[in-house]
Length: 119
Image (tube, rainbow, N blue to C red; front, side, top):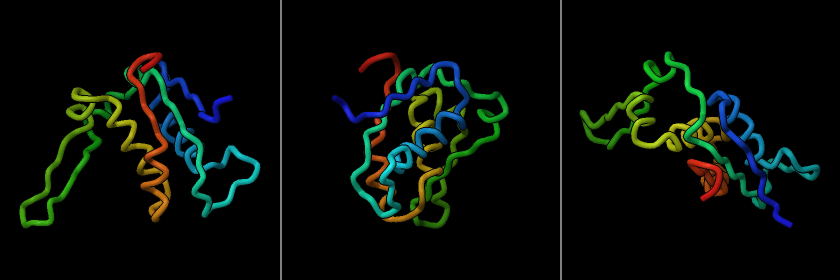
């Protein structure tokens, strides 16, 4: 018996999938949920290549990273990131919905995203 939570992303909006995934990664689907609990379930999202993005989101959403040096900010639009790998857009959306504390890295490691039906 597997304790993984399976989510099918085919034809669903990015925000709906991300919020449901973040909810499951926190462990809130369990009856014995504790906010400081580190024993979390694995959440598997399949069909990530079939996630529905709105055109406005792809054009206007910007992802940035900063090297720490002056002039070191790099910007990419969601369209550029999605062309390379749609899973990264979903991963970043889920990461933004998780609590910004020490458990965040542990929670995001329990997220597995597949392009199609299976590996």
